[in-house]
Length: 54
Image 1 (cartoon, rainbow, N blue to C red):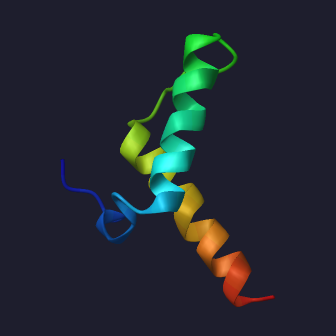
Image 2: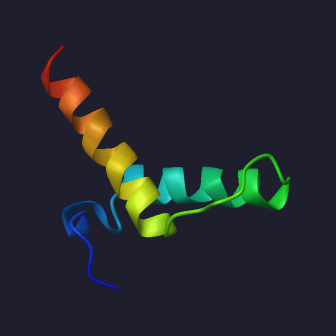
């Protein structure tokens, strides 16, 4: 699936966040209303921006 976060796919950060979301959904702690690629990609982008601003 094409999305604006392709640069993060298969990175360690992407894979870690994806796994965390697997757990949250499985435990019914969250319900995804948006495609997982967009959720994880957005978080990767924001974390990357925060790191650059340190």
